[in-house]
Length: 193
Image (cartoon, rainbow, N blue to C red; front, side):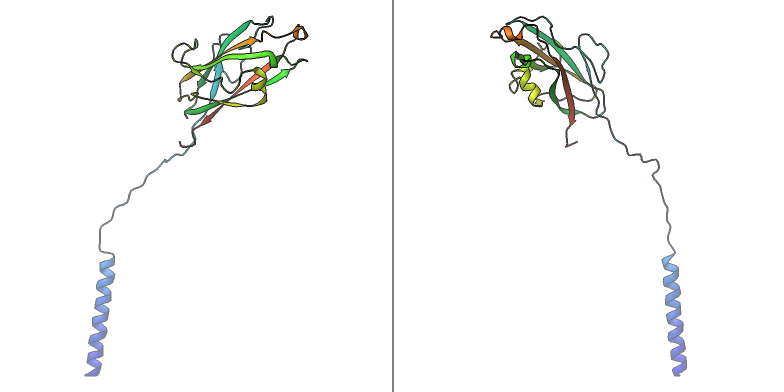
């Protein structure tokens, strides 16, 4: 009788295992896939032009200047800043470098009487004054400045209009002097994007 009970218990255990094994694989299933998931980077491309350059480019020349200024005279110009990339430019940093100098330094006598950012090249639509940090060309040569309201959406354009005045107190030691400047514009993205 003991053998019969053991045999029945063993058969019961085997039947339970067979049911569990069959139940584990007895369900419907379906699978799907997602292909061609591409990850890439956008572009941040700041291009410039001015009154002489009609096609935006990374490098332009002679946007500002006058080679025969007298004390008290002014010269003006603009630079168009185009965002040709796919990422918004949150701000533009402006710097200047004197590539040809004079002694005495003419940059110290060139006042920046106006620097404005606007959506039109005449800077008469709704300009924002950005000149509060740099009042002379020498100041712009000594440090770079973040231009307020210089955010440029992808595909959009903003303009920097500047007026330079040769200081009325410029004396004879500056006669016949000239300098050459390179203005550098660096666009930065918003780190929150």
